[in-house]
Every structure is written in C-alpha cells, then in structure tokens.
Length: 347
Image 1: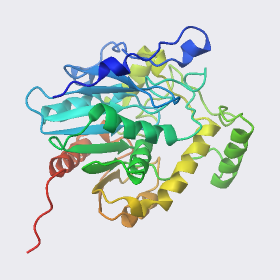
Image 2 (image 1 turned 135 degrees about the vertical axis):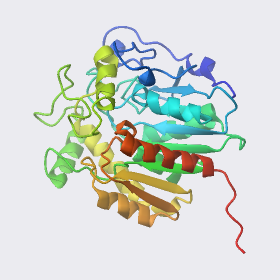
Image 3 (image 1 turned 180 degrees about the horizontal axis):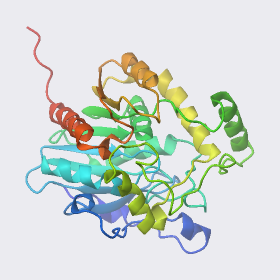
Image 4 (image 1 turned 60 degrees about the vertical axis):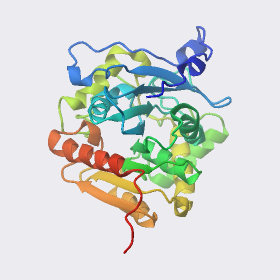
C-alpha cells in the first residue's frame, strides 16, 4: 500500500495554551482500561491531519491489511463519534483485505474545535466537512483505479458523503449506513428550532445549546443507554474512549449545529439527481434517531440505490449485536467487493 502523505499533513502548526489550546486537534489517544482487544487500534494504525484553506483541522486515521490489499474504504463518522469507535470494524475490514481510512468530522473526535467549550458539538456550516472529504480523497487517499474506493457515511456522515458526491466526488460506490436525513427527537418543534437556530447564527450566538441540553458527563449514559445499540459491550466503547480522553468528549449540539444540519439537508435534497454513483443504504428498523420515511424518500430519488433494512437494528449498526452487525458488515463488504467491477453485459 502507498504510505499516506503524513509528512505534509502532520506539519500543521500546533496550537499553544489558552483557548487555542482547548480547540487544538488531538492525535494519540489513551487506551481505556479493561477494553477488549477487538476494540484496540488495528496493527499499523496511523494518524494524520487534513486542512483545507482556513477551515478547521480534521483528524483522520488509516490502517492496511497484513497481506495484499484488494480495495479501500473511507469512513465518515456520525455526530459524537471518534475514529476510535470504529476500531473493531477497521480490524474486520483489514482482515478482508481492505485498506481503511476514517475521517472525523469538523469539531469532533480529535479534530480542531470551533469553540473553547470542547464538548459542545458546534459548526457554522457543513461545507468544510464536504470540502475536507473531497480533499481527503484527492490529496491523501489518491485513488488510481488499482484499488476501488468505497465511501461509507454513518448517520450524519452519510449526509456529508452524499453531498460530497453531489459536488463531484468520484468514488466507485457509496454506503449510507443509518443515514440521518431527518431528526426524530428535537428539543422544540422543527420549524421553531430552525428559526431560533438561524437567528442565533445571525446574532453570532449560535455556539449556545438549547436551554437544558446536557453536556458530556462521566456518569452519563453510554450508547446502549441512549438507544443507539442493543449491545451492552459495544454500546460502552464510545463512552469508554471519551472517559479516558477528555479531548474526545462530545455533549449536546449547539444551535449552530442544528442550523447547519438543516441547511445542508435542504441543498442535498435539491441535488439528488446529480448522484450517479451506486448507493447501498443500510438501516435498522428500530432506529430512533432518524425516521425511515426520510431514508426511503432519498433512496427512491437516487439513480441507483439499494435499500436494506436490518431487523432489530438501531442507529449505530457498527456497534450492534452480532445478529444485526453481522449482516450489516456483510452488506458493506459486498458493496466494497462489487465496487469498480464493470456492469454485466446486456445480452
């Protein structure tokens, strides 16, 4: 495998103390005590940073299979996740000959924050996420046709992935895993929330959360307790990494985050006809984060989209019980293997 261009990307300036120190990107993380081996970094895991212009620095990671690689995948994480959450999946994909790249979202995981309150999920726009995804493929991954490239977007990462393809990102296949095309649980009715969020953005107050929204807490609920997965072991992984690494913690979204989400949702829905890439949409039938009707509507509007609904699956399909995660992983691998193959000849 071609080694990533870490020299250039790691040469980004390190931030000093004060507010800049609180916002600074974060590379190596401490391993939580007692974590099972399957949740540890894959062999040869390496970190890097990517930055486009004046946008915030975003962290990525990469690992390669032990033998010859047959394909590669770029994973875009969901809200509140870091790359560490995906280590088990990266190991599984490496074992199948797949090079795994994971790009964290702006203002999350080990990426630079846009505010000094590090556990507040805050962005002004999703445009830097989309731009960084395109730059990640063009400058870091640099597909040359030898190894087909699949992009997998989880949750809100699916929205970013779809928008990047609309804006011209060329990949061999796209997996939308529990893509968030609407939010089921909002602190206020949708119209009121969007109006308030956009007003606070105009007033430059949008880094505030909705009153009463919880910050991250050491004794707070893990992913199983919040209903993201039914697996008690995998459901504790994300919270364990955040407990051991304060820089990874993520609490409630800011009002700016809500405004940015609905902005990008509107433009993505408008431009679905631009997507010619083959899309596999994987969703759980008990997902409480995003409604099925929004996913089905998007899939129907795409030129080539296959929807698979997983029985008893919740939102974090990569952290689900084996009975759900197994079929999910096989569907991902089937898409990766099919990527780049010429379509069958029409008799």
